[in-house]
Image 1 (cartoon, rainbow, N blue to C red):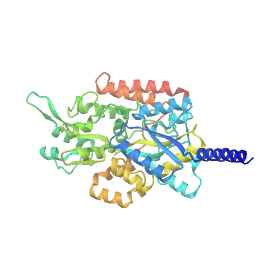
Image 2 (cartoon, rainbow, N blue to C red):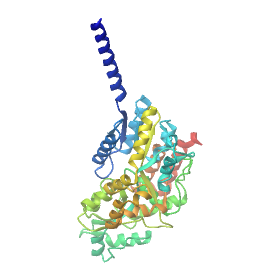
Image 3 (tube, helix red, strand yellow):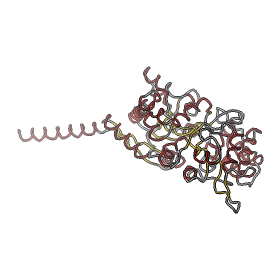
Image 4 (cartoon, rainbow, N blue to C red):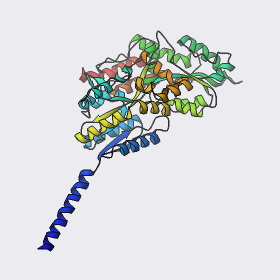
Length: 428
């Protein structure tokens, strides 16, 4: 009898231990993150996940590096349709319409329960919330965000007889300075261009700098209409095309996104437009003194916002979703948002982050860090529509056709408008 009792007790203890182990398993949070961005990103995200998991032993955030932003949304939506989506992901803020249309994500509002939660949602820069708030709901919160800024080589400015501490403030000044900064060899071949604006990867985004400065918006807030053939849009494209074809101060054809910072650091070009997310990369690798400025004004100043928001996926379990929300709040505390900005060059996403001692010291020691933030009052939402990838591709194809001379700016934009209208018809 004693032996049977002992066996039964042993089995009961084993079952309870097994139940306890199962109960103690941390909540898994697969976290898709795009790696095709500037700076030591994977190392930082790995460290964030490790630190968060240590502070929250009941949760296990597992970063999964899925490639470029485009690769990441394709993989995330493929996994969503297969029933094995990530629990959370950083995706382009412009993918919000697509994620809603695919019924892939849940509003962040679902997790707002306290006054502190509500204050957190209200703590972000308003410009960074523009792409994530649709239909009265917040679908994604800002994390890896940027604006386009102008970088200039102060040494080359000085050589050209320009004030090394003064960036172009207007389109006219940019053309004039670029003309003086363009160099040719004895055979007439350009050895140094004055200005370079990349037109691969994200041509629509760089183009939005020109259109915003020409006082025109590319799409409506509902994301079901675009204005690619607006005369002001065509005028903005003509200005970009003329930089190479008329003034000769800009490389001809399609300019690569990825090589633009390298061209700048190798002194092949004196001024570039690119993301503030390249700031740390350029600061670490440029062998000369450089400046960072807001984009020059046409009819007005302006830049689109850019970068990624943090999204929570619908097919995750309630426990996983709550864990992801906790991680989102942890990532965007003022101290962490400040350190992320310092380490990467992306814009710290809340005013509170800029009030931290670390960020105050960084901005005081390195003034260019504040430029993208100071440009936010002039910023507009990044181009975003339903069927966003294809509607944006129509514009990208048109831009590249104009820049290579295959079409006139007017024809290119009319063709892009026609294709976009076809794609958006079912959403109107």
